[in-house]
Image 1 (cartoon, rainbow, N blue to C red):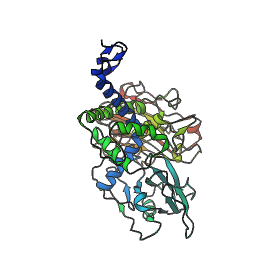
Image 2 (cartoon, rainbow, N blue to C red; image 1 turned 120 degrees about the vertical axis):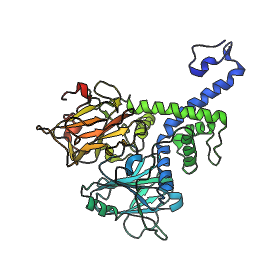
Image 3 (cartoon, rainbow, N blue to C red; image 1 turned 135 degrees about the horizontal axis):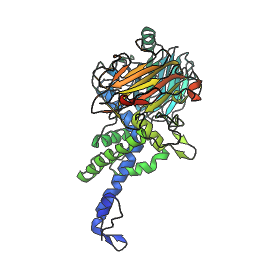
Image 4 (cartoon, helix red, strand yellow; image 1 turned 60 degrees about the vertical axis):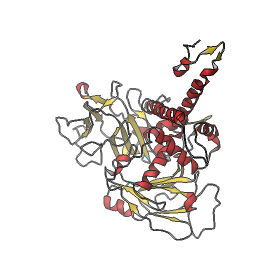
Length: 467
């Protein structure tokens, strides 16, 4: 007999007394493998995200281990998940198996940056929050298990926690000429041997995508990076799941028709879970103000992604589905230092933000940011900057055209067409596409931390009112 109390495809399983019919065992195993795929999808999000981005650097931009890709224009950043549209990005991906110990030389200046493994765990900081304190210097990255060699001079030493690493660097100086002068001084070279020139590569408007691939491509990317990365002890149960899904070290990925179908379904269902986990966060304290619709988007507590008594699997999946990279600067609790990020995924009434509707956001006077603040719009499907005709996705304090109200507040408008007030404070959205927004505070100040300053909700125009 069939057991109607069982969910999904298992409801089709016939029972022979207390055991399943042997003829229906394949249905049970299909469900088991499908559930493994869903969980592996969530677990692998940060790894696949960086692997995808690395692949784009290599194949689209032609970047080597010793180059830097410089994202400056809006078009440059359209493939970057939840990119900041205000400041440039300078970064690259490095295979320490190929390079050996690596030196990154950075100049003195108003900068931020660091190094992370492909699980997006930060293992080294540079710039104003790093050991150089913005004074610049030579940073040495040692591969996992590599002892510190004899050095000729002073280095800041960083022990990598993975074979593949990302080096990211950002200039915070608002002056474009000074900013570019800092970028031009960065050097990436091996510790020993001939140093190839560090090329600064521009995307030059070439289309690219850094969001995790869908369908079977997700698993192809995961299999590829798994062959080139060390294994953490904490992940061994997930590696058992990978084995069941046809992904093993030193073995080609050749899923048959049955497994391919399950993997496609698992990736699709896993992404639905990731969307809910990111855009409707269930974590305690996720809502930054109890009477507002703004979430504290970064729920990870530490760069090692560990909390007291458990590893932050779902917190990690939430952040790395909708964003890339983690640094201690993003979790700064020191007024005037680092960054703070809030996310809005719904309007004031709790409805998804609709690209065909018009909305208003009131930013009260005196936003608590020492350096600058911004509000940015992202496409909910790609989590990248909205690719609108306007070719602009943000408004903020560094916008010389920003119009302020008499009381010092700012009204930001979102919608497919500009408001009656004109285009100055308007961000264009796309009908038929949902979107979400980040509010960023660079150098967050005490009114942000004590929550005495409150950002308004994003309110549908027909019901707009002051917040």
